[in-house]
Image: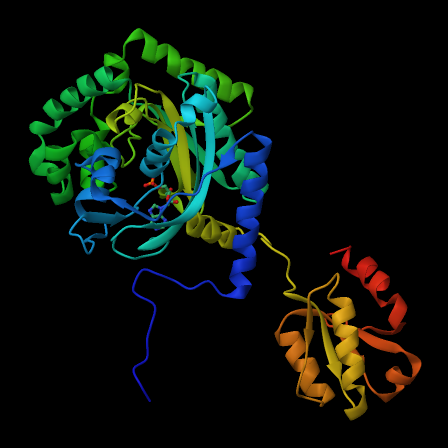
Amino acid sequence: MGKKFKAMRGTHDLLPEDSQVWRRIETVFVDLCWRYGYGEIRVPVFEATELFERGTGFATDVVQKEMYTFPDKKGRSLSLRPEGTPSVIRAYLEHGLSRKAKVAKLYYMGPMFRYDKPGAGRYRQFHQLGIEVIGTPSPQADVEVIVLLWEYLKAIGLKDIGLRVNTLGCKECRERYSGVVRDFLEDRLDRLCEDCHDRFKRNPLRVLDCKVATCKEVIADAPEIGAVLDEECVSHFDEVQRYLGAAGVDFHVDSKLVRGLDYYTRTVFEVYHGATGVDSSLGGGGRYDELVRELGGPSTPAVGFSAGIERIVLALKAEEVAAGQHHLLDVYVASIADNSFDYAFDLAYELRKDFRVWLEYESRRPQKQLAAASKMGAAYTAIVGEDEVRNKTAVFKHMESGEQAEIRWDEAGSWLKKKLGGN
Ligand code: AMP
């Protein structure tokens, strides 16, 4: 036997039982985005490395430590995308989307790549879905983005979710605050973890959301941003909170919420799952009023979120939400006599006009076929033998209850539709 291959560490295959759940997670998202007036954008999975250095931020952990970067055959430095926003903004500028509408509202889905230490809910290839609203400073846009994420997670069945929001202020306020935090931390460096020493040098604000217990103690006394915010930033954040209240969304202000990407200004937010905890967020985002300019465009305010599908699946499992249809197949067609095979073939193709049908090509033994049907998760097995061929019928056996009924061929479709609720 030759070498056996395995999926690379931090990546995973999606098998049919799970992909049903994924499909639903995606469809509910697409449906909600349509209702909120967002159009889909699909961008490449690799880009010039510099796009992420400038976009995601040169000083971030993502760019410094986690990017899959490689030279192409012409020696250009490319990177697999660690997140979607820089690519979306690149495409927005490249295709002049600002000329098509004052505000661009886009959604995307797809794989992202980060060379992170794999663990529960942490992968090297993971999948995000997200939205961006580009071209407005309105706090109503911040709230629309947050509400869409919140409504989405509720729509797929999650109950135990929490929302935390914060403001980092505009560029000037943020810089001022960063200075205040740097001064505060400078005297306490000996009590910070190794990673935080590094963060302190690159972006002291990141120390604020370190999860290490000793760092948390230090951070508890850190100055809050409120003291350095200018009037406009205060009023923007007040408006965000007022509209969130009006939309009926439960939230709390967490003055230590910073998030890992450098481009956020003003509003930042995160939705977490009660069971999996604040440390492992389902999704989050915020306003990024400087990014479009940073990537070579005109000054353009924007806001967005991204959520991780793997994390959502874990949360659904923790809440035991039936996230998809249980049955992978509607009907397993089983021929049990030598002369019923052509009839089974015709029946299967007839039923396939409306149902998910498996036709067994080889086996004739009834018990074996029933066992196979139930293993495959079929709702019904349609059994055809000599009598059924003669009577132009099939015996439909419900796999869970064991109930069975002989149904005429020409009535089988409408009978099944009633039984399966039309799917
Ligand atoms: P971020 O792009 O860092 O703001 O992350 C947004 C969301 O993506 C997080 O809330 C997670 O749900 C998900 N996510 C980020 N990194 C990973 C990872 N390594 N594995 C799985 N999901 C991730």
